[in-house]
Image (cartoon, rainbow, N blue to C red; front, side, top):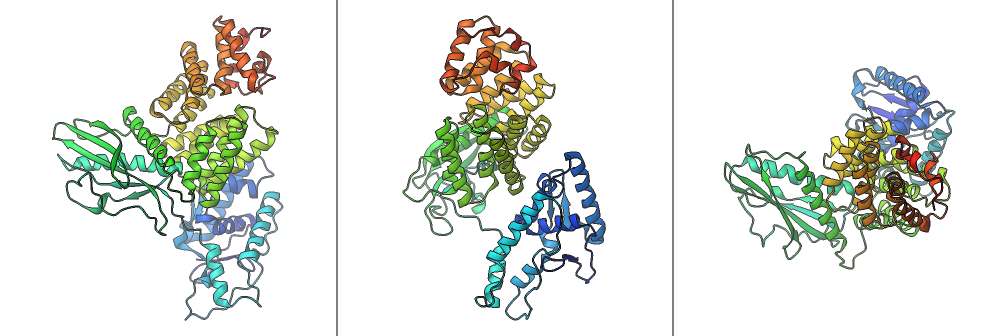
Length: 567
């Protein structure tokens, strides 16, 4: 099909039949998808721009109505429009735009340049849409629209192609190469180990801290000697140097007993950096949802990215390096570290425009809120949601983008239904995602199932291994445990979080209340004094304030046992 963006908007079948929807907003929706990266947008993003002045439920209903109108207009071509509960997209194999058709025409084809105003006639009284329209027209004029005195048709075609094509993925200096290992015993064991390695590779790629190069299919032989590896893997596709680890999986045993050995090798020497083993079940299977397996997946991920972060070959830092440096800064806490982390994530996105880098920036703002390190509450909330929506648009199927977004909903607006949906989505995408399990647990706790929620947060901290955000998982488990009535365990978890991150405010807040509830007034006062070093105005009255970031306490009677005076 042809989508005409210059002049009056039209959608035309290959036969020449006009199947343009009648509604202006239905046409605008198609145009927005045609111009979007990968031709997809989240429902929330579209709804905000086309029906932002209406309530959420009314806007969602209007969006569904427009989707129905578009499908009816497309008729036999209705498969052009794809929609699920989160993302709406156009199938790129089924359409082209008039701009792209001209841009990709061969020199032998004689085609007149497309004529008309870009996105003509879109008069929609929605402020968000008008802002988008102005930006698109400005971008078109700057990068695409021909200046007759400067542009030849061939140059225009090149500019058009660059405008419409998403930027190519930039080579990363952080790389993990998946290599084949020894295989003894039944051949079906290879399928089991490949699935395990796939889960590890997926998590590393989702986090944005390294790229993956799969070389497992380079040989069908039973083994590769430990001191050899096909290809050197030390240069990127553009010749740039890269920091590389190899991940090797070996299977040993017989029909009755098999073991998987995972090993990380430091390149180029192929020296052993880390290894671990897992027992394959008697029936030849390995349950990827098993707690020990998920923990092993995260141990490999944590060790691999930490190793890569400490490799310094003097080359300019890549997006993945910048991202991991930002993660480490974020979890060191404090205003200076938050500002530094935000700049590092922004630099990573500038180098490689991925949603995960925006998601980390959104997530960072939840820490600014929890630590009360902000100047304007409304500003950081608006920033967090803008970054979150953009991240979800760019990577809707990245489990860490979904998991981090779930935490944004929980912390910023206490939108626990939205957090629940996003956390469940994240777990469906990657069952070994500890942040997603923790967010699901918190959402369930606030939605009336604290016992289940507490178990989910405990699972999160168990499978996270030595992740740099472990102290936050301990704190979230303390909150869920408090709401579940498991007060002794909640104290233990808050103490564990405090030991890992002594200045982190949430466990100090809960300990000040839990110690007081248990009659340990001096310990409670000590927590208050510690909080006041970074939060001078803290008092028990703050905990009583429902707007203060300690909402879980208000789901229990603990709040009533706070001392009238703090000293």
